[in-house]
Amino acid sequence: MATALYYLHDSLAPEPNRKPRFGVGVVISADHKVLLEHRQDNFMWGIVSGDIHADETFRQCAARKTFDETGIHVSEAQLRDLRMFDDPTRIVSFVEGNIYRIVSMGYYVDLFTAPETVCGDESIELCWVPIEELYRYDIVAVHRDILEEYCRMKGYQVRLKSRIYQSF
Image 1 (tube, rainbow, N blue to C red):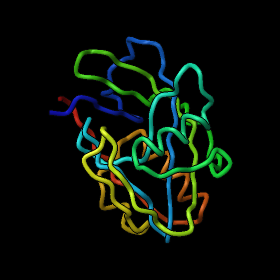
Image 2: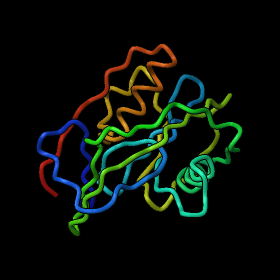
Image 3: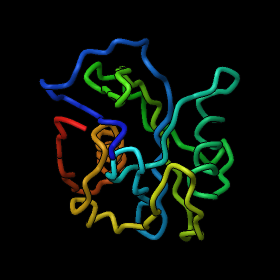
Image 4: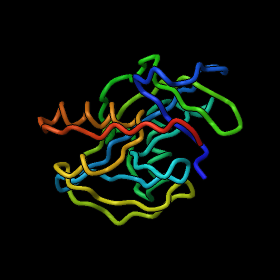
């Protein structure tokens, strides 16, 4: 069962009932491929992401989440800024009723070759996807904008699927 629904520019998104959540989204690429994570919380695909801890910077969070979710070690120096993704329509709704606005700092890291990966606790599987095939995947709404920004910045013409779930 899905435990989280993510919304972006969706008029049917519920109103947040909790304080905003701050975190990161990290696009990891190698060999003209992007690493996608098949997520357990909604069975869709996404990038490395997660909430920031009170005692860490956004970069520290990005490096920690990258290792936790993929087994890939990246240094803070390897992370490149995309931008802050703070659209007020970036919403997550959890099955227990908590609804948050999500604000994410976007990063990317371009690796020379695709390293072996290890699935974290929040993933079903990890997959290196050719950038020109990203359109085939159902990407979490609040990761689409980050991936699209990365592709735009790198000069790739990519249109990602928009799939909306209305109930758990």
